[in-house]
Length: 198
Image (cartoon, rainbow, N blue to C red):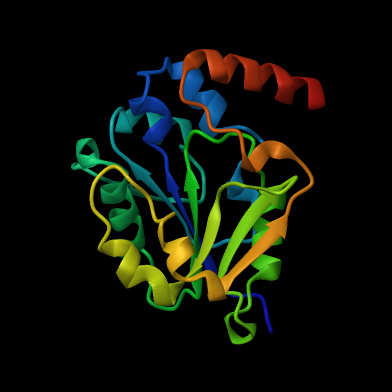
């Protein structure tokens, strides 16, 4: 199967809203050289919420479509809906990225895209490291309707169990798909580790 026209939806308000980060933190998370923007996924849709202008500034000049979510305080699902609604009709699927996972690289996303094949039943591609499931997840567009019906401060994870027959686990070479930063302290630790690898 030819490479699918996969899109990337990044919920960029997460890292800012959760702990009101400094501008430097926004730059660190959004502009990291390995960020998913370098992956094969196109188009890239970035959903903003809290501190939207700071996120826009950090992404100035990047090849992304910016979508603002005025309902971000109502939960993660509202950003997911905004991102999906902004995608063109001809995409085959979407890689849903969380903004507070700076360890996710273009390589991780490209591995998901390479594994994706709806004809062979691989319609949901989920990254793993040492047997643990992580993020981001690549979803076939046939799940977009269900994903758009989710409410509250939750993502689409619960749909994995409901569609286990369409799930493909994709092994990753490192734990970048597992590291979720919810505090400035966690960011500082992760930044130090990433700098050591550079």
